[in-house]
Amino acid sequence: MPKKLGKIILISAIALFLVIGIFTCFYTVDDKQQAVVTTFGKVTDITDPGLHFKLPFGIQQAKKVDVNVYQKIELGYVTDADGQAVTKTSESTMITGDYNIVNVDFFVEYKITDPIAYLYSSNDPENILRNLIQSQVRNVVGSSTVDSVLTDGKENIQMQVKELVTEILAEYNIGLSLVDVRIQDSE
Image (cartoon, rainbow, N blue to C red):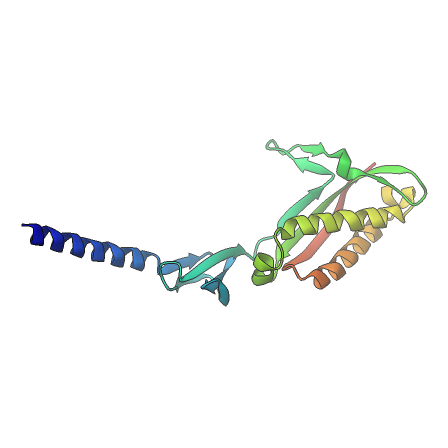
């Protein structure tokens, strides 16, 4: 009887091992994603949408990244659960080049263009982008007059901020690209 029990346990363990192996061999990538595949921690492949095979038991891992999704950053305000904009004066209050104080809210769209750089070039690429945009917004608004910030110079300010941020993002190589920068409100 003990030999039979030992044989059953061994067969059960092997079957469990095979089932776990089979279920950890496949992964699915959605149509808005790419997956970065690592083998023993080293990047070996980038896979597109679909069903894919990988080596089981942690030998290969697939990290999915949303590359075909426009993401947003709100500067100077936060949209709450009800869809209402709540002002964040610490981000929106700025001094113009002619020493006036303005509140400017920006809406920024970006997307992930390089999933490997996004995952492994920095700890928090979104925070880097947020700080970079805040810095360049203050730089451009600080060199503009209050009239151009409030009225006819908004488009020029948006273009300048986008150009400066895009230039620095290319230098930083954090896997993100800027899509759009818009002034939501200025007062």
